[in-house]
Amino acid sequence: MESFTMPGGAALLLEGGSLRGLYTAGALDALMEADLYFPAVAGVSAGSLNGVNYVAHQPGRAASINLRYRHDPRYFGPKAALNGGSLFGLRFMLYDLPKEIPFDAGTFYHGGQRMIAVATSVRTGKPAYFEKGRTSFDFLEACRASASLPLVSVPVRLDGEPYLDGGCSCPIPLHWAQQEGFAKIVIITTREKGFRKQLPGQRMIDLYDDFYGDKPLFLAAMLTQEVRYNALMDEIDALEAAGRVFVLRPAQPIGIGRFEGDTEKLLDLYNRGRREMRAALPALRAYLEA
Image (tube, rainbow, N blue to C red; front, side):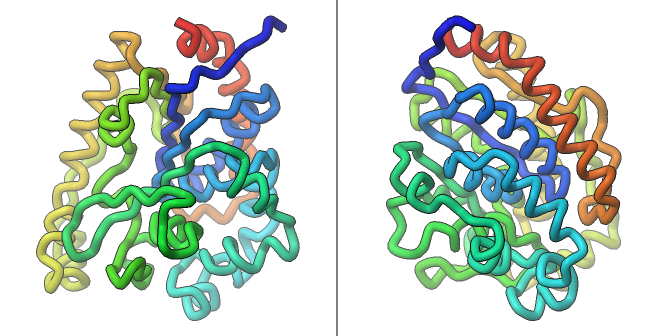
């Protein structure tokens, strides 16, 4: 294989999607197996959790966590919510699991890659971009906020401000990457090409209002997230067609639920992501070298 040098102005953006993120985990493992490490990684929700293992240079760790612990009450369910304020046991995953599945904190914090976790301010409804090494608090708390799903999570306080899932305001941090001046932008999504979200029904609107009616700016973000998501996908499609971004998407729709419990399906999804990224590597290298 010819030698390849990762350009310094390249950023990797990771969409969320809860357990659909196993597709991303597989894709990132394929990148690590090919020794492709981006200088900057920005993740949203499950994308930030996957990004942690990628920046720590630990292939297989994200898949191991999600497959081995899916039915562990510490990972998901009422016990996880009671202990960590979220239906997914984010405290358990980020702080307790390293005792069982070792985490290379040295590489993560000092390996030279930038990492950004995107969360949504409950006060303003706007995205916040927290960067590893540039926060006054433990950066893993930003990842916990980024992955704290609305309706089923208690907001995470960072510097005294409450935050929830980054996907509420910023499903893919494209505009952040553009403003940072990255010449090469690579995106891993958890939805197939052409996917667009349907507008929420009245029952969901009422539920959002019940939970966040006293947070009008965050409520507005929740009520407009489908429109903004669809507009962003249109923008990404246009940039991709023009050769200005590179996008890896699932070749076929991901047919699992957000809280999928079938570990065979989850394993298959992981393998799909790994297989599809491996197949895309020649085109990815060509984009990065152009």
